[in-house]
Length: 195
Image (cartoon, rainbow, N blue to C red; front, side, top):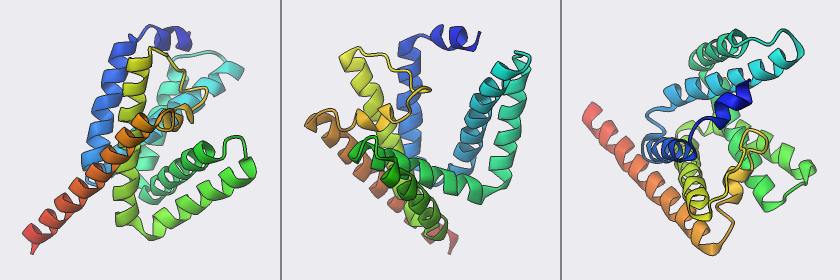
């Protein structure tokens, strides 16, 4: 039932959403982190609700209710979202460099999550810029190659697109650097107007 709904979404719409979301994260991720964390909580809740409904009475309400619940929790408990964002980036990064090596991937994810909590502003700018860069690079890769990936089964496909060729890596790196630079400039301008 859910996969039919997901499969019915046109791929071009999915890629357009990925590119727009990636641009927003890349260039304004720090400013919109609370909203982003609520959206991330909603998505995690829907995925969890989907798995729960497979083992119980299949209902459209279960994923929706869990999605809204997780969105509220992530909005209210900012540090949880911060830790999960850092962990997600650490996991994707280490798995792209050392695929299939869980002995390195899980500690790296935990390390990134913990460091993100303590060095919040700087790391959030870097993480959201490169997360946005990853979404854009993945969408461009999928559009050009014509491959349709099921990211819900294997989320590391997102970052592996950045390492698919030197050109995609360069796109990922340049977008990430431009995103970090623009977010730093935006944060400085905001800091100077507050004084």
